[in-house]
Every structure is written in C-alpha cells, then in structure tokens.
Amino acid sequence: MPAIEDGPSVPAARERARAIPEAAVARLAVYLRVLSAMSEQGVSSVSSEELSAAAGVNSAKLRKDLSYIGSYGTRGVGYEVGVLVDQIERTLGLTRKHSVAVVGIGNLGHALANYGGFPGRGFPVTALFDVDPDLIGIPVGGIPVHHIDDITAVCAEREISIGVIATPPPAAQAVCDRLVQGGVECILNFAPVVLQVPDTVEVRKVDLAVELQVLSFHVARRADQAQVDAMADAREDGDRTGIDGMVVR
Amino acid sequence: MPAIEDGPSVPAARERARAIPEAAVARLAVYLRVLSAMSEQGVSSVSSEELSAAAGVNSAKLRKDLSYIGSYGTRGVGYEVGVLVDQIERTLGLTRKHSVAVVGIGNLGHALANYGGFPGRGFPVTALFDVDPDLIGIPVGGIPVHHIDDITAVCAEREISIGVIATPPPAAQAVCDRLVQGGVECILNFAPVVLQVPDTVEVRKVDLAVELQVLSFHVARRADQAQVDAMADAREDGDRTGIDGMVVR
DNA sequence: CGTTGTGAATCCCTTCACAGCT
DNA sequence: AGCTGTGAAGGGATTCACAACG
Image (cartoon, rainbow over all chains, first blue to last red; front, top):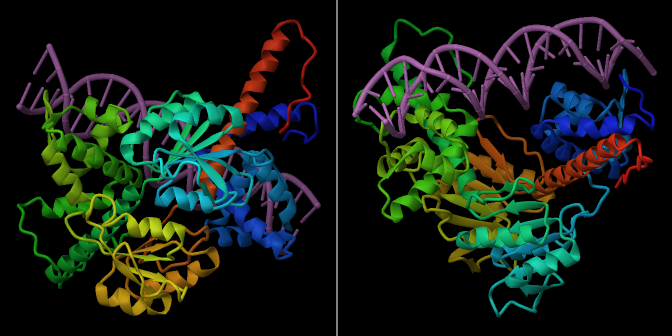
C-alpha cells in the first residue's frame, strides 16, 4: 500500500491508470453520474451498497472498481461523495476540456450538435461538417457547418480531440482519415462500418443495428427456451428432470 | 408455438443458442452486415481470413464465433456467403419481424423514427410516443405520434417487441414501466439512467456520456504514458533536470 | 460493530496450434 | 495442399469471502 503523497505517488497513479480494466472504466463513468446526482441533492456520504444499487451493479464489483483508482473510503463508514467525484473525474481525464467535432449533419448529427456542450459539459462541440451545400454556413445549435474538405484544417486549428462520425456508411472511412490527419486522438463512430485507423487513435462505435440484433437474439433465445421447457414438460410426466432449472441469463 | 420441422438438429441448435457468448452474438451481427454487402456485390465464397479482415477481428476468433452456430464451412475452401447469411439471420432471430416503438420524439427520436424501417429492415418502427401536445397526431417519418399515456395500450395492441427510450432522463423509468406493462420484451435505452426491469425483460443501453468519457480516459492515459516515457528518456540521459513537475492536466 | 479493500477462486472469453476434412 | 473446426492454454474480469481497520 503505497503512501499517497507527492513524489513517487504521481508516477504510481499514472501507472495505475494503465491497469484499469476497460470494463471498469465504463462503469466509473456511470458511478460518476450517479454520484453527481447525489451531490446535487446534498448527499455527502454513501456506502458501497447504496452506490452499487443506484448504479445497477453488485457491491463487490463496485468496490473493486473503486479500488483501481485508490483507497478513498473509510472502513465502517463509506465514501465521501465529493471525494469520489473528484477522483473519478481525474482518472477519466475530465479535468481537461475535450473539443468535439461532429461530421454528418443529418438527423443524428443534428441531435448530437444540439446536445449543446454535450453531456455534462467538458465536451464542447466546436465544429460541424457536412457535404450538403445547403447546410454549409448555416449554424446548427449555434455552430456553423463547414464543408468536409475543411475537416483536416479546422480540426488542427481548433485542436479537436474527439471526432464523431454520423455520416452515411460510404463516407465514413474518408471522413475518418481526414479527422486523423487533422490530429484527433479519438473517434466515436455511429456509421455501421469497420474503420481502419493507426493504433495511436482510439475508436469506439455505437451501432444501432447491432444493438437491435442482439436484442432480437435474446427474444429468440427466450422463445426457444420456453419451447424446450414445454417439450420437456410434455414428454416427462413421470420423470421430472433434475433441477437443471438453468438461470436463463 | 411455431412447429419447426427442419431435420433432427433443431433441439441441438436450440440448446446451442443458449451457449453462444454474449460478445460473440454482437460480432455475429457485424459479420452479417459484411456478408450481406459481399453478397450484394456478387461474392459467393469467402475464407475466414478474408471475412475476419473485413470485420476487424482475427481469423481464429471469427472461426470460433461461427462454430457456435454450426459447421457450415468447407475445409480447404471457405464459407458460402449465402449459407452464412441465412444461418446468422436464423440464429439472431431475424427471420421474425420485431416491431419497434420509439418514445421521446426530440432530436434523437426524430433521427430514430426517420431511419425508416430501421437498419437492414426486420425492425419496423410501428409506434411513436411523446408528451408534447404540439407533436401528438403529427406524423414523423410517416407514423403518427401518440401520447405516452397510451404506451401500454398501443404496445399491447400492436405486439411491439422492442421499445426504444429516447426521453429526457427523468421520464425514462416511468416510460420503461409502461413499455414493460405493454408487453415489450426488450428495451434499448438512450437515456442516461439505470433502468429497473423485471428479469424477463432484456435491456441494452447506449450512453453517449459514457462513450465520450471512456475516450477521454484513453486520451489521458496516452498523455500520461508519453510523459512517463519522456521521463525515462531524460533519466537515461544522465538525469537532466526532471520535468517531474508533470503537466497534470 | 460495520464497511472497506483485496487475495483467491471462478467464470468467461480470447488466442493458440493442430487434428481433421476436402 | 489448404482451410476449417476445436480442444487446450492463457488472460481478463467477476464474484467470493474475509482480514484489516476506522
């Protein structure tokens, strides 16, 4: 248990960051939202049990996740909300602003541009791009739309760090290439396309079709399971199968 | 209860379905899209190497994923595109239509409603809901908007199986409850809220803030790593005065 | 006491590497 | 000869359960 002091602990904190499991990072963002809401309601202290219930995970997982960023709890008591908010924000790099560019101002792009400052601030949308001449120059959500040919120049100039791709699929890779050339470090991709990027660039994708199809799979699985159950019931009226009652989940 | 008369492997296929890892299911949806595109371009045969490259995974993973749904390849040759498309569609339950309801016709809801039939068809949007009186009755993407008080009745009547929540956070749980009461089996949640549902209902969430914050984390991690590297370099150079004051964001 | 923090066990997923088939 | 299908090994992430501590 390393001392939390300056000096050697700074590199330690840095090295720890690398060691946080990807899955835990996503959950930290959820905890942060719950904690922020609690903070606004004047809650100042919380136990792992309470927080985990509000975040929809079990308490052991929550404590393990929090342990990745340090030991900020008090045994027998719980955590101070304010402390956790600060530490999670620091871990997620939210103390720095990350300028966002949105490319493709269709329905989805409009929705994204109008989020206005983006969720929870810290992610100001500072540039919009499209190909449609009718859109260019017109402000959406207060920001003028530029032509996608200017992506590289504008992103470099405004030090955009996150590019959001909301274009039709065929345009996505070309847009991505320009964003990368303009120096963006991360891309959030809404286009149903597998993007090729240098490994210095982080990509996350949000794929509506995939989400729906995964849900569809679960519907089918449930229906099938119901059928298997029914068959088993019908077939074995004397010999009740073992308790293989399967948790279908 | 559709009687499926398809050879002896039906129960086997059913039991296998339960065994497909969640992560693999999501990737099958990606493979399906790639395969559909290939099919449209007249490609009729593909190797695991080609397909995995197009889908952005390695070939061993692809073969393992495909093995969960059965053995449809030909050793020494590859896979027939059409066969894979059919089998993946069957596994994902895409042979059945899944009616979709969208709740919350703001910017995002508009975008979703206008997807028109939703990605790759099979997911027709058949009902829209909002609270705003100015929206009710007006068609969006060809479908009239109902009041959210009617969610339960309309969903039950039209046999909606998937509910999409695109409301502001405070409304999400109440909307969710009504969808569940109306008999929806699955929910796709865009609201940044942890939903409480009975465990007969499957929920997936798309959380923009989480996505951005995960990206932010990676930016921070890279910056930190770069600095650690720089310090290591400097130290090797005979301890040039450390910039060990760190640029802490 | 009550709650945190964490080694150890477990489970799940990925990767390897090669046997098996065409 | 070439490519698929898959046991086996490896690596992560989750859960357990309890020691440590205010």
